[in-house]
Each structure stands twice: as structure tokens, then as C-alpha cells.
Length: 370
Image (cartoon, rainbow, N blue to C red; front, side, top):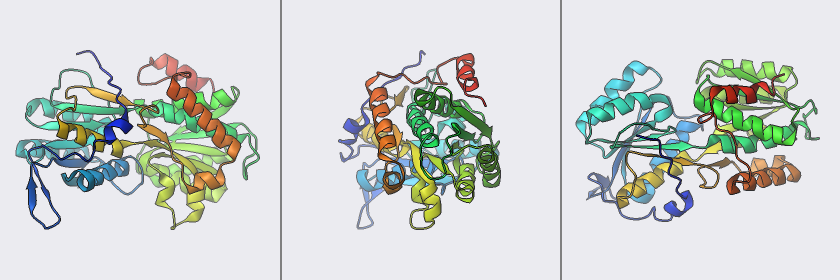
């Protein structure tokens, strides 16, 4: 089946999120009884919670599904040991206790699609993946992280050329990925194009940790880049990226967080770390899951397809918090906002590594190599 990308306005869909459910499960009410007819969902975490990154963003959506839609929800953390993945998903599908099984498609998508074909009565929601083929009981959500990363690139390029504290005008910025993966390349390509829109001669240092949870290695990679004159690093590395935050504090440099508002992880806990994170590239995973649950309750969720959400749909963006407002100069904030409007309106098209051929993506990466 030909790939279909359905673009639906996230904000408009969220306006209906308070509608009553019509799924086959039951939800606990305030008096401890159950309300028949509410939607039930289980979120299977193929990794861990607690990093204020991708899985935490999804988990916030699961919590909101329960609080605002009355859904019955459960969260199961199964870690990164892939030997546990297949039996967990198969057991859940066979039990049929939940209307929706939700998980990270960029990690377990291929496995879940094969299981979905074995259990056609069970519905699956996969976030962070596009989908090909005939899978009528699967709904997938992808995010145009390249667009939000473009804004991060604009900010990073202006920071390194500004008179902000610690910036040294070396025209060097950094990127640290957890591992080489098409989605991580999509972050990188957007980041580079945003930076080059400010300065075509900028240099981008790129490193890969080879892990999604090795914070010590993440810190080591970041320190190496800072020692080469980089002022600000964008780590797309889940838990491992928190090591880059430690490096930024020790080296007196900056970080751009990823997936959720990572400065909030340190708000009131470590102001040094919170202030080192100028903003975060957001994938609004939580909102997209609430939206999906609301649409399923209405009977309008487009099963068998995937939808791609970008800046125009509020599916991605940059964190605008007290640290961003206090630490980022007004001229940089204005430039970021102008870039947002250009991308949202279609005046600027950001290359996607998920749709461009490998040679195109590599040429963009090579164009800023030190």
C-alpha cells in the first residue's frame, strides 16, 4: 500500500478531547467504581522513564488520557533488552485486556507490525514512525523533527556568533546522537540547514555515543566537542544526552534539549543545569497520543495509516520557558520566531532525511564538516 501522510491540525483535534469515550474497556471513577465504555490503553516503554525526554513525553500523554478522557491506562517498562519485547507484546495482544497497545515505533515498530498481523482484533498505536504495507489494526504517528531542529540550528548558529556569555565566535556548533538512525539523521539534517540559514560557513561537529543510556559516554563526547571550540551542542540521545548537560555545566557552555522540555528536569533542583539548557526541540508525543485517543473515542482515528505532524500542526516545536526567556537575547528569539513562521507557512522547506536519499543527507552533513 502506498504511503499516506495525513496532516491534521493538532490544535483543532485537541478541542474535542473532552468528549466521552466509546471504547470497550472501563475506567475508574472518583468513587472507586468503574465506568463502562471508557477507552483502555497500555503504554509499553521499550527503554526507561525519568529522562524528561521521549518516553517521558509519551508518558505525560498517557497520564493526560486518564485525567481528561477518563481512560483506563497502564504503563509497563520493559527496558532495552529486546529478548523481553516480543513475549511482552504477544502476551498483551493475546490477553486482549486493552483497547490500545501503545509503544515507540522507532524502537519496536517492525516487531509490533508483525505481531499486529498475528492478532488482527488488537489495535496498536505506534508513535515516532511512518508505516508502509497493509496493517488495518495499526495507527502510526510521525513527527517532523527536522522542522523543529531547523529552529534549533538557527538558535545555535546565532548563539555561537553572539556576545552571549561563554560564546567565542568560532562559528562551531555540535550535535551528539545516541546512535546512527534515520530519525537521528533527520534531527541532524534539519539542525544543519537551520544553522546554515544564519551562516553558510558554520561548522558542525557530529559525534555518536553508540548508546541511548550511557550518560558517562555522552559527557565524554560533549567535552571532546567543547574542547574543540564548540559553544553549544544539540544532543539527540535520550538518557545518554543528560551526560552532555553535565559537560555543559563543567565547561561553561550550552545545550539544546530534545523531545521534551529537559530544563524542567532540573528546575528547582539544579539551576546550573537548567540554565545551561537554552531550549529543547520538542516532539509533542503526549499531545499526539491524547489526540489519537480522543479520535478513537469518536470513531474517527484513521486505522491503517500514519499521520505526520510538524510545526504547522503543533506536532513539534521549541520549548519556551523561563530559562529561554531569561537566557536567550531578544534578537535571537526574534530570529527563531521568524524562522518558525517561514517553515510553518511553507516559505521554507526543510530537507527530511526520512524522505531524501542517503546521498542528499550525507551531502548536507559533509557541507559543514570541520
